[in-house]
Amino acid sequence: MQFFGGSEISPSPPAPTVSGNNAHMVYVFNRNGVCLLYREWNRPLHTLNAQQDHKLIAERGNLGVPQLPGQGCSFHSFRTNTYKLSFMETPSGIKIILVTHPRTGDLRDSLKYIYNLYVDYVMKNPLYRPGSPIRSDLFITTLDQYVRSIA
Amino acid sequence: MTEKKGREVSESCVDSLLTEMVSTYCNRFYANKPELAARRIEAIGYQVGHQLSERYTMERPRFNDHLEAIKFICKDFWSELFKKQIDNLKTNHRGTFVLQDNRFRWLSRISIDPSLENGDSQDPSAMAESKAAQATSMHLYFPCGIIRGALSNLGIPCAVSADISNLPACSFVVRIKA
Image (cartoon, rainbow over all chains, first blue to last red; front, top):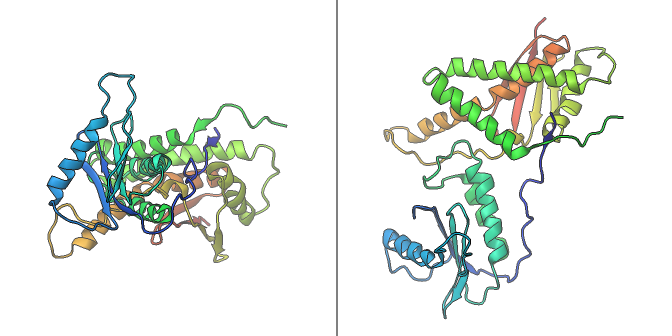
């Protein structure tokens, strides 16, 4: 029996589009709307408490939920004066939301890379219980490093 | 010349299977009896190591001494299993060998939850660490068994234990029975 596999993380990370301190926050929700992860690097305003904040973002994520199977999710980002929100939903119901500086480019590849990190360091971690908040040091450190490198 | 590209197995499948095996033995078959679970998992590893060593030494001549056999484990055998070699080999020249892998593949995704779910405030960090360390060490009985099975098949009875004081590096200590 031959053990066979690809490289550690694939695809390889996309090249950075802008430099500087652009990324503000990231949210990861699961199918039931449980917030698995919230990371903040640069948040100018704190108006809501944590629960209200998560509920607001989760509902915003529901904008893109497909009505029928086969219908793709058409919503992937919107931009305001002060921030840009990029969104990705996987077939397994995991929603990844990235809030960045308004002039950031298309982040779809970055969201896919973050999802790959999630699969590798969270789903494949034997000590992780699905549905519980993510506390994996490895995942959080790698995520921090990656986000700082793209923004 | 053998054709290497034949039937292959996805690495994710193997990783998931091993995770489930450890979890099943620890939480279902031998819940609350970690020593028994460890023995069963190690025994499975022993069988696997036995068979794999048969396969991977097919075209080689016999080994001259213990060191040659250990070097085979460190280089060819480890490469077949984990696509890399053992990073560091130490010996006391009296039958004990330490095989160190600086980034052991089957531990590379394990990450310990630094906070504690429930427990007394006396020494939370120590309790959390020992629970996680115990869960992690359960995953090492299988590779220890593989090494022991492989060496046994090469005529070298031994005892193998693992040391994870330095994650993700992992050391396997092989003590050859005189």
